[in-house]
Length: 424
Image (cartoon, rainbow, N blue to C red):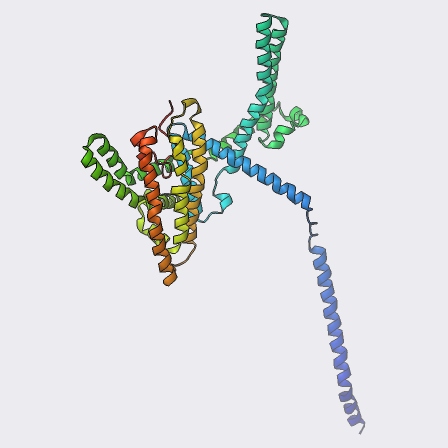
């Protein structure tokens, strides 16, 4: 009976023991959880306080001004290269490279290579212009003093001051370039660092290496080779234009009319594919990419409306207004000024063509269905007036352009962004 009572008592106390055990385990898990939370809170880095709206606004304004200045500097550099024979192919290669990068799926911020470096070049040119103003002013005063009183002491002192200011400006600019050539380096010369490092040869050795790296980063030989191959391949597509020029110069009027009509027809067919073929060529970096018509036709079927928009921008909206600048030749001294407008207009056209191909190649397969078929045939019909408008202005420009019949070769929409072969 005693044993039975003990067994019965143990059975009756089992729930209590289980409850105590469960509570102890919950307490342990809670303690462990608190320790883990404490450890996590200690190990986690402190969150950064949110920036104020004023600071964010100033940051966006600084980024916008810097980006706009860099883009303007890039356009000016390309315009200067376009005005120089042979170096024109570098500018043409850059425009093709922009379309090729976008075709390969690059972000828009990465589609303009060396944009920030172009901004540094533009900033350096602006700094040289501003630093030369005091010297030019002193030289002007010296010339005025010479006119009033030749050989006077005032004229001599002005000449001496001009020489001193010139060397001071050169030293200031060189020190800014040695440190990196950013805006802050022009605004603050860091005099303590100048006294500490300006006399050390290693400072200028490092500056020479940095200048070499900065120059080679532009990849000018690669862009020249890309532009040269693109130029030659495009001329092959423009063989009907060459025949048209030869027929109008040497043929009879009747034969010239028939040959001209046939050549314009074949040229219209070529223009349906050529802008996108150029973007595809730049994306694959192979000359045969300029003749991959089947690949381009598949891309068209994937995104016909994007294709139409790009062709409207690249053949109508951007290049046609530029024919007004081809009427009268520009003097050679300022031939880069119309090239500036040409580059500024053709660059968005190349961007649109690259974006259209990127849009097409982002789709894994060709859309099917009634709407896809209607879209493709609608765009095919709409492309006819787009190319027709371009050819009409091209036909008219042979009578209004300074270079006459050569306008059939100087098609800035698909070739070099130049108004004419040379100035007067």
